[in-house]
Image (cartoon, rainbow, N blue to C red):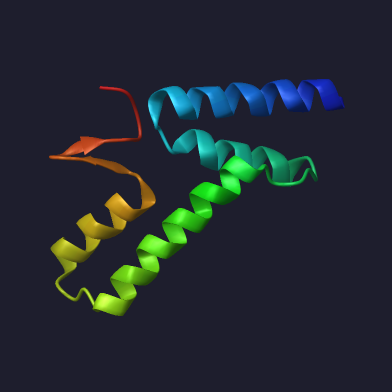
Length: 91
């Protein structure tokens, strides 16, 4: 894929993420960049930085009860929209 195609694909993924908040678009952009030896875009790094901060806070708080821990990790990763709603897909 040429540079223009790379930019278009990453732009499409960024727009989809910003419109829907579905974090799989971020992960897909990361995978695409790694597979094509491209630099990771700032918007992907921002997601990872924010997620790392949330996960570090959980570790600092020593969340120990598994059901609570699993839910909190899902929220930190952006995989839960709260109240049982998933950010994996629209709905």
